[in-house]
Each structure stands twice: as structure tokens, then as C-alpha cells.
Amino acid sequence: MPLQQLNDVIAIAETGSFNRAAERLYISQPSLNSAIKELEKELDVILFNRSGKGATLMAEGLNFLPYARSVIMQYRNLLDAYGKAGSRRERFAVSTQHYSFAVKAFSLLTHVYDLAEYDFAIRETRTQQVIDDTAAGRSEIGILYLSDFNRKIITKMLNENGLSFHHLIDCRAYVYLWRGHPLAVRKSIAFDDLAP
Image 1 (cartoon, rainbow, N blue to C red):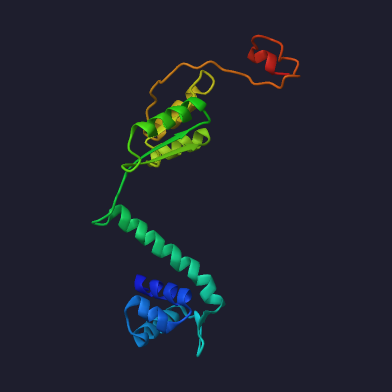
Image 2: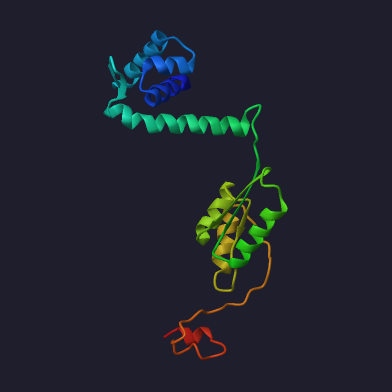
């Protein structure tokens, strides 16, 4: 099915008429009718109810139209990114566990570079997904917390995916408690205090 046939369906649906759609598309009405009949035959459905008053979408046509629009939109996005006159931007994505410092640093980075030239994305997610995103190239950088508790397993996962860990900062662990919690009055809390 050629993309033009999808444009034809959209034009007929929007104008409610084969004649008006043909005018909009700068083709003859018989050519448009023939193209739609070809498409309906290929799909084995009737997309339009044709009458003297115009053309209305049948149930199958109503289901088909969003798909046609989506494909045309994706095609236009593809041309915009890779076509001769396209405005393809460099992509920079980061996957991270939920860290406010990472989000702040990412936000500052987006203010330094021209948003017309770069397509920025940040994804806050779980450890496994950070590693998966980075290994698959969906993210250029993955930000994880490495500690004595998780070092062995995360190092193994990184090695299995051909990734390397680079130290950024040392972090202290913080515990956030409800004001009325029995431990809330203490200045510091040990992991043993959290066990109960």
C-alpha cells in the first residue's frame, strides 16, 4: 500500500467528498476513486460509504483512519529527521535512578546547549532498566548508586553488558521519616536501627 493511498483516505475523510479530496490532492476524481478501490481490495474492507451527498467513513474506515494518520505523521517525522531538508538533531539521553542531583545536572546541561541542535531526554527508572538502556544505546549515560551492598552484582551486570563504571561523587545515605516517627528525634540513624 503506497503512502499516497493513506493521504487519499485522510483527504476524503477530512473533506467528506471524493470530488473535494481530488481537488485538494490535484488529481482527477476517477483516479482517486480507483486508488481507494484498490486499497479496499488489498485490505479486503470497505472504508467509505459513497453516496450522492458525499463520502462517509464506514466502521472499518473509522478504525483505519488513526493508523493512516499515524503512519503519515511518522513518515513526515522521518523526512524531518533524515530528509534532504530535514532538521535532524543530535540526541543525548540519560537513564538514572531517582536522584535529584542527576536531574538538576541534566537540566543545567540543557540550558548550555542549543535545543534546536540537540534532542535531550532523561529517564528515571530502576537499576536494571538503567543498565539495559545504556547497553542498548537508548541512553548515552546511565547513573547508578554503587555501594558495598550492591557492588558485586552491579559490577557483574555492567561487565555482562560491556559497560564500565566511572565514579562521579561520594554520597551519604539519608533516611526521610515522618515527623511523628520514633526515630525522627535522632540526629543520625544506623542501619541496625531500621531493622525493626
